[in-house]
Image 1 (spheres, rainbow over the protein chains, first blue to last red):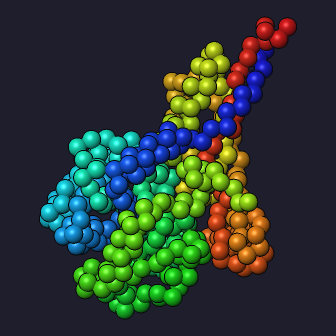
Image 2 (image 1 turned 180 degrees about the horizontal axis):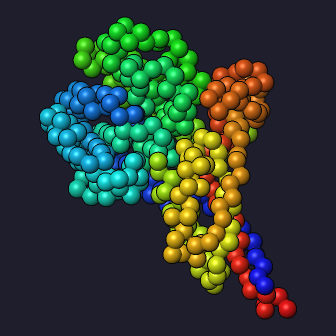
Image 3 (image 1 turned 60 degrees about the horizontal axis):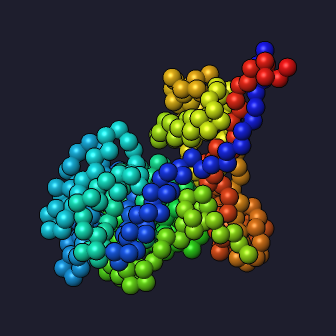
Length: 239
Length: 121
């Protein structure tokens, strides 16, 4: 005959990642580098957006990028055209980046010699939301071709982001994109989140995003992670 | 679908605890899961058996407690319920200056270890 004994653990499942992300955040702060994460579904235009941003910021600042991809280094090759250092993280079958992968990829980087570091996550709107990477801010991209209700279908990723960027606005009319509904849906899952609209192809709306990034760097912005259980900052309870 | 790697992380945490407890076999793992954790309950259950294979959790069961989303509303200056998990506005006043205080949990609460009766006689 057997009986069972209950053992209390009360441990967050992703504690190891949270510890790794906290160490990264400290390294970034000490090095004075502003780190911006980009998340989106596949095909939302992350790489084209980042290529533009790297080229622009690269003229004035020391900029680098890490790019996550399941199988190829195509994105890194594209981004390298911007002339800034780019490192590919091939995740294999893993659908998201985690703090350990970022730590490993940063071995070759001199963080103190950088002003900006961008981390392009694997194209996926589900899994990356659970993994903090120590960024100063995380931007979620949504292309007009994906539909206005994406934020409602993937509330976690929008809620854990600090800004939303609507891309490919040059196609908005062709796909009858309802901008008002998109803004309403983003605000519904991430109340108060800044929302930008841009078209890389037509070079529209990008100045405002660059200003947001510069402001983030100047203020040493820290992720206002809305969800408790993801980082230590969330341990604070409302007074 | 990252639930298998989540399941493996749970198994790893449980195995560490089993070692601290001096070994044994796990029959149940109790987990708390919020809808904003980004983890799908069914997919996690589906991955469980595979993640446990060849470990002291081999025949264990995963029980999952759903944690509802809660928000702190700046207008009400109080904690409350959101309209829904897709609309994180205050259900009480409709206020939009809200932040999530619960609902992203992904936490192992406890384990049940099998004990043999001889120690209980």
